[in-house]
Every structure is written in C-alpha cells, then in structure tokens.
Length: 264
Image (cartoon, rainbow, N blue to C red; front, top):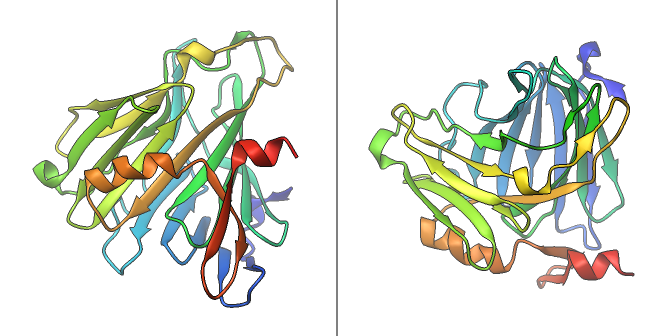
C-alpha cells in the first residue's frame, strides 16, 4: 500500500473491453476523485476520512455540502464513541474491467477499517466491502453507524428522506440535485431528524462478531448509489445494485450478479 502522507498525486485510467468507456481515479491534496460516466465522488483522507463530495451525473451540484468535511463515515460506540480518523493508506487496483479503491482507516481506539470500494462505468452505484481488524476485545459491528451519512448541504427541508425494507433494507435522501442511497442485504436502514439537513445510516449490529486483538472479522458488503432523480428512483434501483457489470461495448453493457461471480 502507498502511504497517503507522501501526498503524491496519482492517476489511473482503466479501459474496459471497449475503449469507448473508462473510469478514473486521481489524488490531490489528500482528496481522491473517482469519476465514472455516471457520477463523481471525492474521498477525503484527512480526519474524518470518508466521502466528502457526491456529484450525480448530469452536471448538478454536489449532494454533500461540508466543503470536504464530514459527510460519510463509520462510527461505533464501544469504550466510548469512535469515528473514522484519517486514512492511513490507499491503493488503486485494476483487473481491467473495474476500478477498485482500497482504503485503511484507524479510528484511534481499537478498530481498523479495511474498505474496498469497487466502481464501474455504466451504472449509478458502487460496492463497499468492509472488514474490521481488532486491536483489542470488541464487537466487529455493534451500537454504531455503519456507515453514517450527513449531507450538511444547506438544503434543509428540501432534503427528503425515506427508508425501505423490501426486498432488503435501503435508505436514501433526495433534493433538486438528485439522490444518494445506501443498500444492505444484511442490516437495517434508518433516517434521523438531525440539525437542518437530516441524516441517515445503516446498522449492522445483527451480524456483529466478538473479536479479540489481532482478529479480522468477516466481510460486510453494502452498496451506494447516486443519480439525478428522486426517492422513487433510488428505491427502484434496489433490484439492480447487486449486479456487477462484466462487459462494456459501444452498444451497451452486460451484467451478471455478484453472487454468480463468487461461485465461478
């Protein structure tokens, strides 16, 4: 892994089966910019690390408004509340058909988060795979926000929220710029009346494992999405977010399910 403290700017362009499509990742000033043909996101590596800007496709404004501040992060209440600190490291991985970002976040207490984020062209969603490395005795997930989203965008009542349980838990907020949503097959989803702009989170207490120092917990998978659209659009996408694009050409994109990929 490459330590981000070096602050070097890096860029990677990934070509798919057709050169008509590409995804890019670049780093400057401690912020990674991920661009696909459907969205642009910023991942801030300073504390609190996490997504700090979300731009849905179509050229609208960011759905997050803290100015590279705290917008999406993980937090857990064990021996007191502990949130993501700065990113200790990051790595860009390519298999030629997807853009994979790997981040490591230390919460300054006893949890180290290892996050793999996989991005594709052609779809408005991406996948997170998260594991917890323990530096003491603690639950991998429990009494926490895994993750928490705080838009802080100044939209106030224009931020509309909704959560659903069918076919699995998902939650979203939307305003005139578009929507941002979280989806989990193994946890719960919640909205919160909080300050002016509200917030929402996923909860994965039911899949928590008791870890001891040096243990690495089982992988947790969830999905994120953004697009120009409404809460109804975010809800409709639940039937698609577990699909992984496997081929790209100038005419369209072929997909298969992640579950099918894992059994090959």
